[in-house]
Image (cartoon, rainbow, N blue to C red; front, side):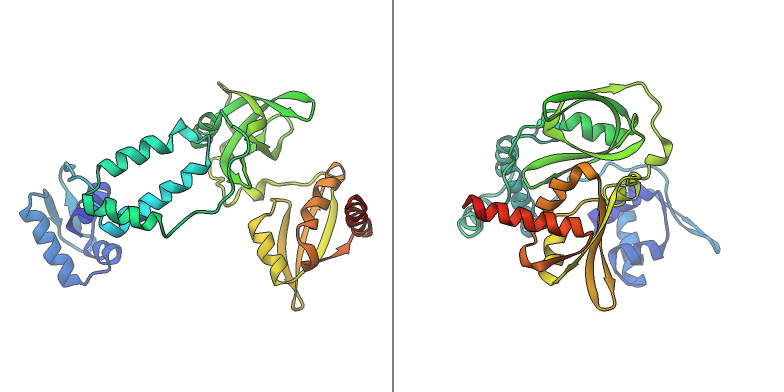
Amino acid sequence: RINQMLRFINQKQRFTLQDLMHEFQISKRTALRDIATLEEIGAPLYAERGRYGGYRLLNPMQLPPISFNSQEVYALYFAMKALRSFTNLPFQVSFLSIHKKFLNALSESQKQAIERMQNRMSFRHTEQIKDSEHLETLLMAAVNNNVIKISYQKRSKTDARLIQPIAIYFMKGYWYCRAYDMDKKAYRVFRCDRITSAEVKDIQPLAELTEITMQNAHSLWNPSENAVQFKCLVDQSGVEYFQQENYPSMKVINEKGNTYIVGSYEPNELDFIIKFLSGFGKSIQIMEPVILKEKLRQYYTDLLDSI
């Protein structure tokens, strides 16, 4: 706890007893005792008296190396195991190099414990389907609020786009980039393997995007005037499927004891929305529009005819 507390006060510089009590879930007596311990080991603390008083770190300290207990070591190791499914990662980090360095830093007993765990645990997740060579550029552009010029290949043509990346994520075998399209002035999602070039440009980014994150990026989504609204009744299985795969243009709502998926799709996205809804199987019932119900019925009929 003292090591963690050293890092905490080194970062805050100014703190109170209440800060320590809240951060480390300790009593006032324990907090006072820990402060005394910090002073004994050389932490240059200055007590500020008065109503708004507290403690101040006079000079930043050189911190001790971070140490991990066995449970933390195991958690880190198996988190890294998930990297094995990716042929591309930001910063081009390879699992094998991390794996080797990590194991070399462990004790013999920890290595033996991990070896035993490997024979009792496995990860069944989607493998990366296509390479995405510009992940690092996209991620750093999102972190630094840069505008980049990309070449984006879709079907048989390649377009040049100016985008301001917001975040990247991995889903069902593909990397995706959430971004704001500067030319179309709209929020878009790009498949990263279709980005054939990416170059940072000296263009002023949109200030209002600096606070947008992965979690609230869907707030940028605005359907076009031609977008078609849809509404589907779903059961609990349908809700669980939606949680695994969904898009910014749709959401789950509750009305009069029933659960619905509502949203919109562009006219040229009809085939896409049909394939998406077909994945729900019997757990979904299309309420509106009628054409969507008819198209899904035709999709199932065509599948049966192809068998």
